[in-house]
Length: 117
Image (tube, rainbow, N blue to C red; front, side, top):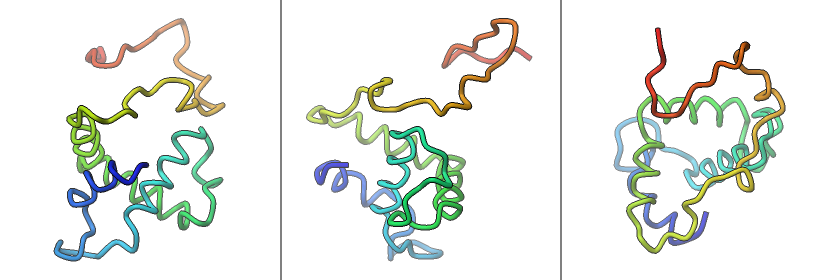
């Protein structure tokens, strides 16, 4: 994550000193750890120790996902017209090897299309 991107999102992240609750040790280190997992396609338990304990990083990632933090981050970064790092494709994010096991009988779900019940 570039310095400009970090400056743009750092004040919107939970865990800051002025927030109620626990203060995060290092939000930037955590975000970079999440980006490392997503870019590499590695499993969470393969996360390098420099990013923290993988279980803690994964639990925090899931908390942020449930509370909509990631959507706010992406919306903020996309709003910046000077951002040169918006395209996400297979050259940046790799699918994990277990991602190949999907639904059987050719059922595919398109993103943004409601799932049939």
